[in-house]
Image 1 (cartoon, helix red, strand yellow):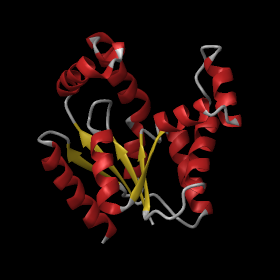
Image 2 (cartoon, rainbow, N blue to C red):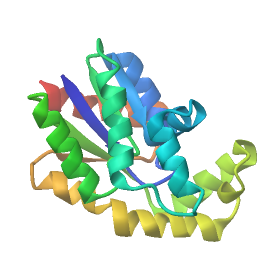
Image 3 (cartoon, one colour):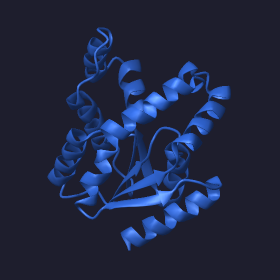
Image 4 (tube, helix red, strand yellow):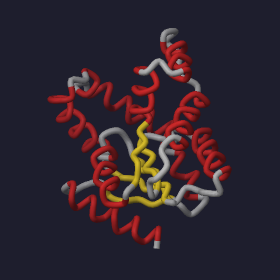
Length: 192
């Protein structure tokens, strides 16, 4: 079973590439944003729990996010594997993912990081902001802050998987198809 972590800062193209990889490899894309929207929108017990933190302006604890991910994986059999998009966001979540997969006698196949310069990310997100309807996609200061938070809190996850010889970098610059070809080449090499 394939368990890919598609990794990179906001605006690096993870979501775009994940959709293409899903079709090619028969994987299920698991996005933390989608998990939250589902759980909150359906008032599930985890959604209610998450909302209780959000309503107080607090961050939802990692355990709640991890439980949402476990529910999704356990309720979605029949795939060749999963692409984790936007997860794990920190070392605690990476350890929890490893432990969860270990309980199933499985493991993360690879973390593939799309590397993109900060200035390119800013330009991409500003362009996305023209149609996304998200105010935070139109403010360069907010975008640069998101990059800084990513570098401080999330980027160390790549080093965590590098220690397991599972971390790979792909340059996320070029056309969507060029980047996809590079990703597929790396994935085919890793799963061979």
